[in-house]
Image 1 (cartoon, rainbow, N blue to C red):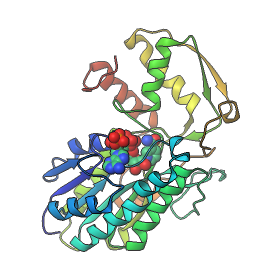
Image 2 (image 1 turned 180 degrees about the vertical axis):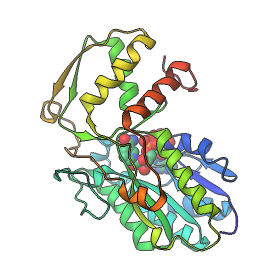
Image 3 (image 1 turned 90 degrees about the horizontal axis):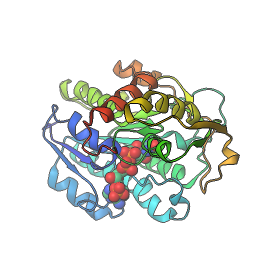
Length: 306
Ligand SMILES: NC(=O)c1ccc[n+]([C@@H]2O[C@H](COP(=O)([O-])OP(=O)(O)OC[C@H]3O[C@@H](n4cnc5c(N)ncnc54)[C@H](OP(=O)(O)O)[C@@H]3O)[C@@H](O)[C@H]2O)c1
C-alpha cells in the first residue's frame, strides 16, 4: 500500500460512526455519508474515490430499511447490490483494500446450526437479495477485499432494537417480542473495533496484497439469543439506571408479528474463520451489551436518548 489514507462511507450510520473513531489511530480518515456521496450514483462513487486516493476504503453505507426495501427494490439494489461492485472496481484500480459489511439475511435461516462463510446463500427478502448481490459483485471484481457479515446491529446511537426497546419500556406496561428468531446481537462498537484490529494487522504487514485472506468473514458477537432474550437482558440491566419498571414481556412467534419482509429463523454465524485468520475473538453478546448500556447511562453518547 502506497499510503495509509482511509476512506469511510456511511459515517453517520451505526457502524460508520464508530469506525471513524476506531480507525483514527491507523491513518488519516476521510469519513463521509449521504449526500456528500450517493451510492445510488456510480459517478458519485468514482469521483469520491479518485479524489481521495485511499489505501483502504471501508463501506459502512447501505440501504438498511429491511421492510421498506420490499417496496423500493430498485433503490435498495442500486445502493446494496450495484454500488459495492463499483467501489470494488475503484479499489482494485488503486490497489487499495476494500472492507465491506454484509448480513446474516443472505441466508434463509433453515440451517440448524451456525452458518459458515461457504454455506450457500438463499435470501428470503429483498434486503437480503440486494446485500447478496453486493457480496457477489465484490467477489466478481476480485482485488483485495474483506466482506464482513454481521447480524442484529445495535449501539448507543442510530436506529436499532435496543433504543426502540428502551423507548417502548417507558411507554408501555407490556411488550410482545419475537422469540423464535435466533442470532447474535452485535454492537456497532464491537464491529468497528474488530475492523480496526484487522486493519492494524494488514497495514503493519510489509507490502503485498491480502492474497488468500481476501474473502468473506462472519463477524458477530459470541453466543446466541432470541429477540425476546435480548430484550429481557437489556431491560433488566437498564431499568434501574434509566428509572423505569421493566414491562411485562410476552414471547411471541414471528407469525404473530407480521412484517412486510420475511426474516430468517436462524441468524447464527460461525466466526471461526475470523478467529483463525486474524486471531480475533468477538466478545459474548452479554458483555458487549453491558458496555453499550454503560455508554448510554454515562451519557457518553452525543445522541443519548434519555
Ligand atoms: N443494522 C443491522 O441490523 C445490520 C445487520 C447486518 C448487517 N448490517 C450491515 O452493516 C452495515 C452497517 O449497517 P448500519 O446498521 O451501521 O447501517 P445504518 O445505521 O443504516 O447506516 C447506513 C448509512 O448509510 C447511509 N446511506 C443510505 N443510503 C445511502 C446512499 N445512497 N449513499 C450514501 N450513503 C447512504 C445512511 O444514510 P441515511 O441514514 O441518510 O439513509 C446511513 O448513514 C451495512 O452494510 C448493513 O447492511 C446491518
